[in-house]
Amino acid sequence: MKKLKTILLLILTSTMTVQAQYDPLYNQYVFNQMLINPAYAGAFDNASITFMSRMQWAGIEGAPFTNSLTAHTSMFSNKGGVGIYILNDQFGVSNNTEVFATFSYKVDFGKAKLAMGLQGGMIQYKYQYSDLNMEFVNDPSFLPTDENFVKPNFGVGLLLYSEYYYVGLSIPRILNIEVNDGVKESTRYQKHYYFSGGMVFPISEAIKLKPSTLVRLVENQVSVDLNVSILFNELVWAGIIVRNFNTFGAIAELQISDRLRIGYSLELPSTKLITNQWGTHEIMVGFDFAPFGHQVLKRRYF
Image 1 (cartoon, one colour):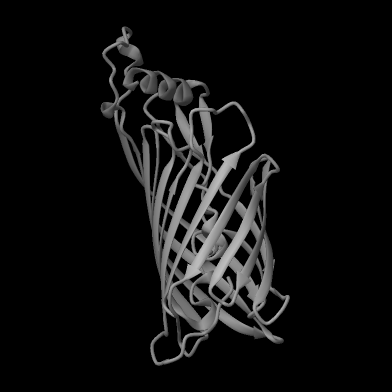
Image 2: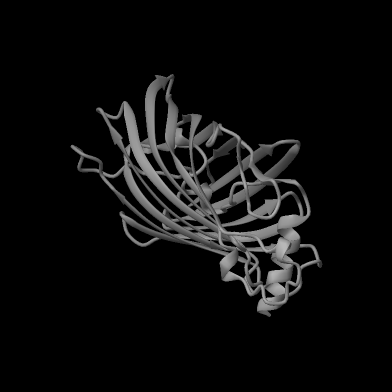
């Protein structure tokens, strides 16, 4: 199995001179947009700490595995927000870690608010070929070496929102980065454009409906997420996810208390090309609390 893993990873990393790499995907962004839009920092007046973990293509060795931790709060009499996020993304021999500080400024926009966000930080790119079993490789020139790079980057975003809707536009990492992956000349990390939107519709006193969407544009490729969730008694979210009409999933969040919430999602591809897997799993644990100088938590649907 380890030999098979090594062969597959070498094929994946050596097929093109310049490879395009994409941001890790999350389904739980519908409850925490800090990872895709810096303008989300301090939105909805609360402070929040959220941990998310995503295991993609469970059952396949070396498949993508992503962990993230975000924290943010409103500041300056709710005219701005500050935050930080840490993300680690592993796929085969690649192991990337991001650390970003996030700032936002909010202005009234009719009955809504318009937030403008800016973030800056560092990304460490690592390629750990020494973890592979290379004994069967006969050509010494094909043996790759470990690589380790640290690159700065920054991002911007806009978020128009009220209690019941939001519209966002963001570029989380503006700089296009090329790094030597140890096999071929370079791997290109392209900037991503995100367009998001969602709205909550009260169906009854106990039920609310929330459709939302996320469009991700990178190079000449477009990815579209469609989500529909239902909130029961302000306690339980349950919904479905459709990505590019070839990946389907379910998502749920439980409000344990005013401050604690947990979430889970299961995602299954419709293609039969990958059969030795048990889908993609995400877990989320979030803690909300009143920001500095406040005693009351504000209700939030996004």
